[in-house]
Image 1 (cartoon, one colour):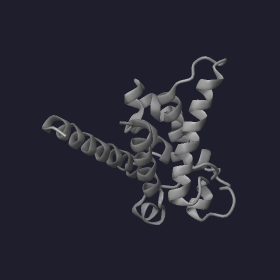
Image 2 (cartoon, one colour):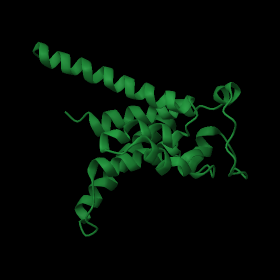
Image 3 (cartoon, helix red, strand yellow):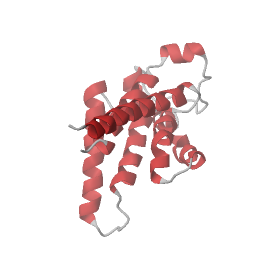
Image 4 (tube, one colour):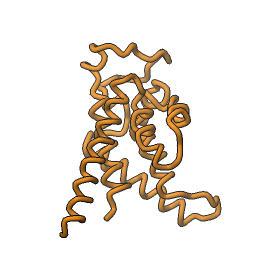
Length: 165
């Protein structure tokens, strides 16, 4: 590899790490898990932060605290759709490509974490009864492993969606 190729590779590694850190910082700054992941990459698709936050607001807590599919996984699915594109409803090959990419992303997440389901990841039995989000206190962050899942999803996005060469 020549020096310019080495430099590009080094820059790519730094960018990957900074994006992953940015996603975790967004979560630790009060974003829900889906917002933290999706908003970190939304600008790459021409989506402003406010729109990204609004699009993913209801996906936190495994879809509005129902503790179903982890919000980070939902964010990965949205990003896969944006990355692969499928604007023609009749193009089943394009849709299949998006579906397969999403399955690949979710399989990697499940392999690394043991589940895609929020309540299983958190060790919670059943659905939350209240829609009210938990207060984001230091104690909240100590007992919730969600920052780890945000970092994992961001890493998968980097490896599987953006690091193809």
